[in-house]
Each structure stands twice: as C-alpha cells, then as structure tokens.
Amino acid sequence: MLTPLPITSQALPDTDPVNHPSHYASGGIECIDAIEASMSPEEFQGYCKGNLIKYTWRYRDKGGVQDLRKANWYLDRL
Image 1 (tube, rainbow, N blue to C red):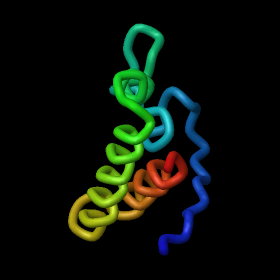
Image 2: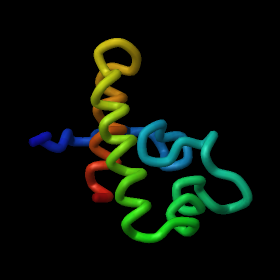
Image 3: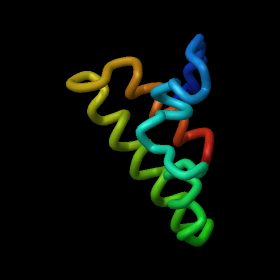
Image 4: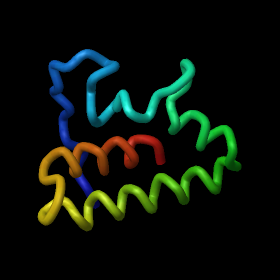
C-alpha cells in the first residue's frame, strides 16, 4: 500500500506542476476535468489507476519525487 506524500509546494495554483500544471489548462478548463467528463466513473478510475502505476514505475529513472507526488495526486482520486 502506498503512503500519501505531503504536497508542500509553495507555487501558485496555476504554476504548480503537480496539482495544476499550466500546460494542461486551456480555455478555462483543465485537461483532467475534460477527461473525467468524457468517461464513466469506472473508466476514470481505471485512467487514474494507470497513471498511478506509470508515475510510481518510472520515478527512479525520470521524475523522482515529483513523479511520486503525481502518483499521489492520482491515488487521491481513486
């Protein structure tokens, strides 16, 4: 079982690369909200689970702690 990591970013919400990445927002809606709206609750849970696995899998080789924070972000949505 994964233990949630505290997210202690001091960044503003629109510049937070984990919780509100600016490159995933356009036209007043974040990409994750559009993805969720396009899926059933079960499909969205599968999407979140897949991303949780992806970020946990690669954190040592690519994103380090930031990838673990992203994994935690998806875990919170399950």
